[in-house]
Length: 392
Image (tube, rainbow, N blue to C red):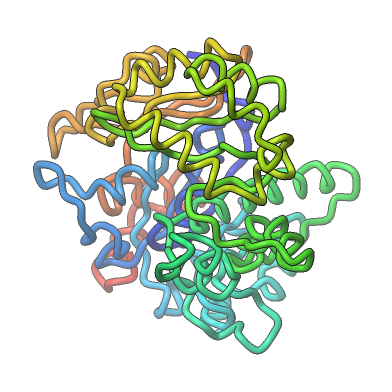
């Protein structure tokens, strides 16, 4: 078996739903040993749809490659177990509102006294500072408060919330920051606290839109990309196609290819800047042409003229995509509990230490015994006592 790039790195995780769990999954894909701490009732996403043949896919996907220990953190003995695990971990990932871990006696200031090299990663909706820090950490709220929702959607319609964009992006930012902190610790021996906010991550998505607003440009543009025109989605006879043309020479070649060579003389469409200003006119021209052709033909003509184009695929088409299967991004994994479960593979295509999905989310507390005895050195009797008294 190929060893992961992060082999030997231990990650302790106390998280719920998506952002925190997916950060742990990314580190696990790269070879880290990830221990997920769950309450005795199990993490909430175990009970969240969608369910595939009874399998809670949100939980199974976000918690791939992890071990599970069930632990009552409201009990002082459960807190002691958590602290013991933190002492033996490199990274801790949590995604509760500010103050939750601190009230349990498990905040950074406490844990760094036990493990000065601990990298404590907190993912919240709005961060540990500022007047909105107590807001719930839902992706939808962060998209709304960062301007991302307002920037999306049809210009004449309501703001649009994209599907969990900031949850997944925050997970990636958190994993990146954690690994940067690991490198810094190699130099200094010192861990640190990492404060990742979904709203902050949302600002990454709107930074260019802020520039457009300050320059007097419209910023809610639907599917249009306002750096070029056409750069949008257009209806065809049998679906939709992306048509993206950046340079003036490619625009002229495209017009010739579709029999609209006379439009090359239109002063309103002479260059990229003018075409963006007159996007309605560009859309009318491209839409009028594309709607009379099948998607495959639109893609062929645009690409032959030097532009970029592709079909807009439905999810039902994506799950059978041969390219994605060849990239090992789609597959099934057998579960003793749920049978064959479809899953999405690792994005980490690395020549020496590629990312891998070796297991989907674990059964609740499946590794409690092994973690307590093998990682922490608890005796069998000690574990039995903790079990009988509802601590694990």
